[in-house]
Image (tube, rainbow, N blue to C red; front, side, top):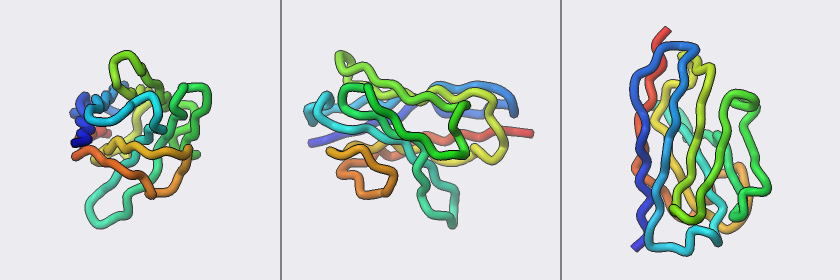
Amino acid sequence: QVQLVESGGGLVQAGGSLRLSCAASGLTFSSYVMGWFRQNPGKEREFVAAISWSGSSTLYADSVKGRFTISRDNAKNTVYLQMITLKPEDTADYYCAATRLLRRDRLYDYWGRGTQVTVSS
């Protein structure tokens, strides 16, 4: 059974930083592309970032480029999202996901349950 468990969310002031983690189990982690998405109530889930199985390639949404960094530790079966210079519009539930191809769409195979990030102004 595949499980993706996010952690590290919370309340932070605008301009602050947070690091999200996603621990994976039940899959060969090093064979999967990992992605981060976010969603607010009533809105579509949107792509944030993705990283290839080796970590050599990454994709970012334009809205987070230069502020967010995705990374992974295959020895720990964990993917991270370092977020700096946070803005109120970054407030959302953040989800990690796993798939076989590096992609921006929502066609990921496995999803976590999410962690909430709130950025106050």
